[in-house]
Amino acid sequence: MTKTPEPGILTGSEAGAAARAATPKPTTKPKDPRFSAGPTRKRPGWTLEALSDAALGRSHRSKLGKAKLKEVIDLTREVLGVPDDYHIGIVPASDTGAVEMAMWSMLGPKPVIVAAWENFGQAWVVDAEKQLPLDDLTLATADYGHLPDMSAYNGSQDLVFTANGTTSGVKVADYSFIPDNREGVTICDATSAVFAQDLPWEKLDVTTYSWQKVMGGEAAHGMLILSPRAVERLESYTPPWPLPKIFRLTKGGKLIEGIFEGSTINTPSLLCAEDHLDALKWVRDNGGLQGMFDRADRNAQTIWDWVEQRDWIENLCVDDALRSNTGVCLKITHPTVAALPLEQQTDFAKSIVGMMAEEEVALDFGSYRTAPPGFRLWVSGLCEHDDVVALLPWLDWAFETKLAKL
Image (cartoon, rainbow, N blue to C red; front, side):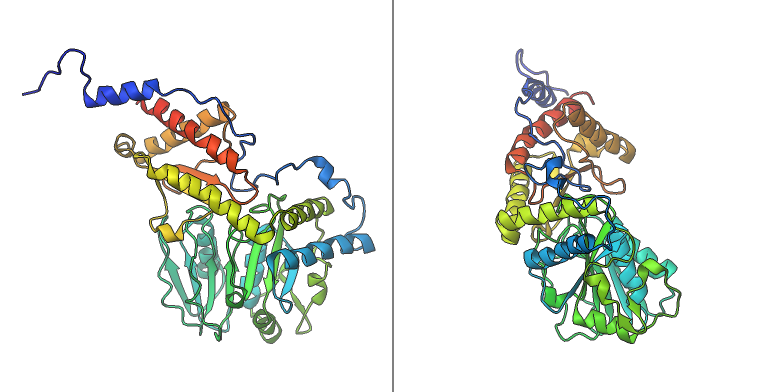
């Protein structure tokens, strides 16, 4: 028998609806609504004036052009603390080009393990499994929110892995599984980790990233950092497959040193180089690398604390120790929404993203298209903490507004 509520007393569902309807619309908005995971927001205070010293209309092989590119390399080494015996180069095609350049140039002489747990890591799985004719390949994969088991790696193999899952918000927190005296080379896609998370250089033989992630740079330029072990591999091994020009790092069995001194393989944008120089100088002058770590940690912790107080949303990463401090990935877990078909759950999350864009509160922060329905908030060290604080009440308001309409 259904119990009739007393006059004036609301049922649980009615009370919830009333509470949601009573939630006031926030009034304070983030000063910068750009929470995209790439390209990401510029450093605080950036204007076009920061590019006024760019070497426009000059050859990248002129004395000035090469000096600008060499300055990018030298300042990168200084800010990141890259060891003196590691090579740093600017290469084509963003982080993707840098990773594939390393894979296609180095893999083959040893067994290979490719570890992936989100969309972009899966791209390296495709290269290794479908494109490269590798004789001995092991795949270590995991679903969104999880890190794969790395125990199969013992140092005798080559390893390709992602430092931070850009679309899953799951990072490698402990690199001790990589032996210092390994025989194989490690290829690390660090594009959403570098400048935000501590990278143990002694564990990494190839490190790649793009300017457009943590540093807010413009697209298309990749960075390739090689350890002495990686250089030895390049100079002692010639892959059996043909390499296109933009992948060639050696000539006559020797490393092309010029690539790592500012003589790039193809034409870079000196306007983009100037923009990256501006970002590097800002980091150097505003707390350095540790300052970037601290700001990202504070921003991410603010979101995590907010999530802990909500019953409708969770961190996509299942292990707190592995949560990313750059792309914080969240999934909607409210039972009403979770009971919907997946397509409708996705539409619900997208409606919140659209609502926030219309209010000019947050832009481009939806979860990746193959990830669980939810959000991905990019909050690395160039993001102002006040913007993160201002954003969260809007998320509550948008969610409650949309839920009340289901």
